[in-house]
Length: 182
Image (cartoon, rainbow, N blue to C red; front, side, top):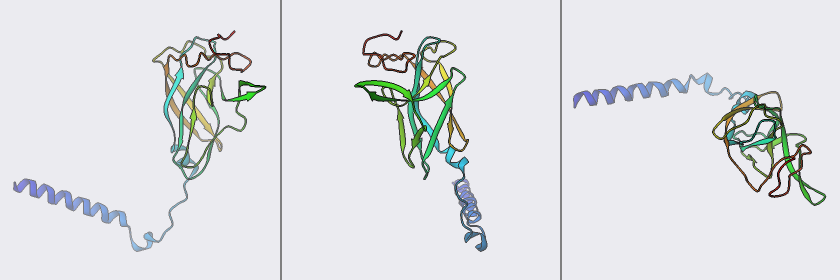
């Protein structure tokens, strides 16, 4: 019992000294906190629940997830890269009454304290021509390139996904439901 009391007293003493050390001297207490750096901004941009649509070699496929910005500033993802394939940032939009896929001019802007969903039928990372098949369960690495030059790496798991029968043709348009890409 006495040993437990001594251990508790020692732990309390260490915690008290640790807290006193954090207070600093009176002259340090008035110093302003440094402004957040671009590095700090980059490290608080994360990819939540990333995944990539499994597919054969040489055929377009896409990566999805939610980009989360925990900073107090908007952050723009300008491009992305992966050793698996050349990449483009893409969006889906209506043109002449049909849904078409096109490169996203200006990148994806993730608002301060916000998120940006990458999803089938919406914004996504388009793998233009994977060098080898992406099989269900494969881990594919990506790097988001931010305005200002910072990068954010992440890994996505490949999943089989039929979705709404979507497939991507080389002309960047969404094939009608149930059809196959040429």
